[in-house]
Length: 530
Image 1 (cartoon, helix red, strand yellow):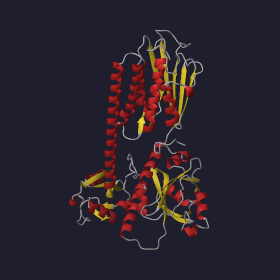
Image 2 (cartoon, helix red, strand yellow):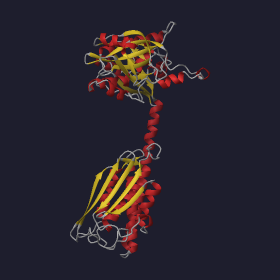
Image 3 (cartoon, rainbow, N blue to C red):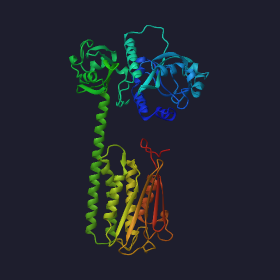
Image 4 (spheres, rainbow, N blue to C red):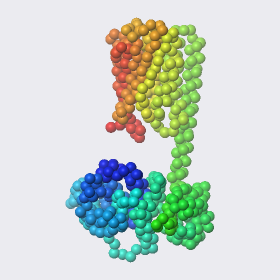
């Protein structure tokens, strides 16, 4: 499916400022659709066609009326000769009306032509011929696009609500044609923004209420307002109207949340109505967001509780790590002491993940922070006459929490294995017993030499690739990761293949190269991304 931004960038040739203006319009034109009870299309000339072809950049359906456009027309091409009213509006820079045939995508035509559609209650995707009202979208002086209203054909007399809404639509349409709407520099979001159906209050230039929709009255009732509203200021009703006053004085839109009672929160979006640069009133949309904010607070409490759990787990793991370290110190130097130190290091690497989870909300972990701690842990374990330098290249970004823990253990084991056993002549223990080989190889450079361990991290969107390369002695002859008896490498192999669904390979190339490839998991479901 083509997005509005992709269609605009690909077909129109508009500059960055004009594209930004259209994006602001697409973020705020829901009010136009609701007030007009109509589907809206955003149409612009295709670059290089001298206006002979048009492209549909955006589409929105009303929440106050049934849609006439069942098909998605974004990205569709239209011959300008088929929609002459659009060219008329672009040329004159004013609102124009007429009739035209709406193009129906092939898949929509096939659906609407289904002989069984009458039995299922389906209606054609669009009417064969529709009444169009075109509003030029002006930016920087000249029209750059046209908002096309696909108007319903009606033969009944509208009520007061519909008359007020359509009058407001006409006023906003004039602002669009004059380049005053959407407001420059304003960022619009549709996540929580109120729509006309949530509740509408019409304010005159002096700040008095001239009309209140039924849903707006419901929101005001929840705020404790029971008096007559029309003909009075919101402040007379005990509601803070600072936002309305500012919008009327400055001619700028304002959005704020008003908490009349501890358990009632209403979002108030005030849009000034302009005519030739003069504020002629304001449109206030109200939305009761009490339940949304209650859910937000519950989520915040849940996140805080989860972080506290991770904090406690981290503290407990650090306590276990300290106990293992104390126990190792009481043992005589030898195999038992080394085993306890390895166990302590593995517990500490798991604690690193919980430490970050205790600070970062959510299920994703910035793994580069863990990498830095694991590298410092490996460097601190080196006790030798020479130096071993660990260099890190790249970043895998954020990973799921259930991936971060085993991956941290794997990386800690590989880095520790490299610094302890790849350089036996400068390492702390010349007896290599963890899979790297005991005899110095061609990479051995003497007691004062510097050894290098390179960690390369790559995330291409489909796979995570980790490489640990050293310039040490290499692997012993006949080494096979699948048949190793080393506890550390067995842990690494099992974690990679079983918990992470990845693959691991080890080879001697002027040292040792370990390559791990893991599928990128979907953050939502935890399964590998397709």
